[in-house]
Image (cartoon, rainbow, N blue to C red):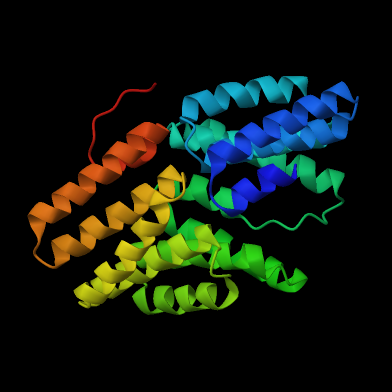
Length: 282
C-alpha cells in the first residue's frame, strides 16, 4: 500500500493505481479482505483524480464494489464512483450515490468520519454549483482544522481558492491560496497546483494579468510532472480566461484548446459542455 500512497502524494495516479492493484491481489491471496477492500477504494479514488477515463473508472468501480466483502469497502468505492459519474454528466446518479455512500460511512463510523469534502465539491463543481462547492469545502476545512490534518487541509484550501476565484470572490481566493501555501509542503503537488490556479485567476480578475499568468504558468509546470488531468485542464482553462482579459485572444484560444484536450482524455463531459464543446455520452 505504501507505494500507492507515495504515488498519490506525487499526484502520479497511474503509478498509484498499479501499486494498489498489486496490493489488492496480495491481500486477496492472503485472505485479508478488509485490506483488499481498502486497496479497492484507493484504486477508484486514484481513478477519479488521475488519468483514467471516467467511463473506464466507473466500470472498474462496479467490479470492485461487487467483489468487496465489507460494507465500508462498498461505500468508499461508491463515493469515488459518484465523482466519475458527475464527470460523465450523470448528475442525478452521482448525487444519490454519494448521499447513500456517505450515510453508510457515517453509520459505520458512528458519525466519527472526518470528511474533507473534496470529492463532494468535485461533484458540485461538475454541475456548475461553485457556491455549493465553496460551502462544502469550507465545512471540510473546518473539520480538518479540528483534527489538525494540515496536509489534507492545504489541498482543500487550494481547491477552495479556485472555487472562490471562479465566482469572482477574488480577495478571498488570494487569501485562501496564501493559507494553502502556508500549510502545504513544497513537494505537495496537488496543493501547489490548486493554490496557484486560484491565485492566478483571482489576480487576473483584479487586472494584475502578468502576476496572474506567472502563477498559472507555475501551476501548469507542476501539472506537467503529474497526471491529474482535471487539475491540469483547469489550469489551462484559467490561463485562457486571464489571457482573454489581457486582450491576448489568440493565446487564450490555444490555452482553451489545451484544456479541452485534457478534459477529453479524462472524459469529463461536464467540463467539455461548460466550455461549449458538443459531446455525446461515451
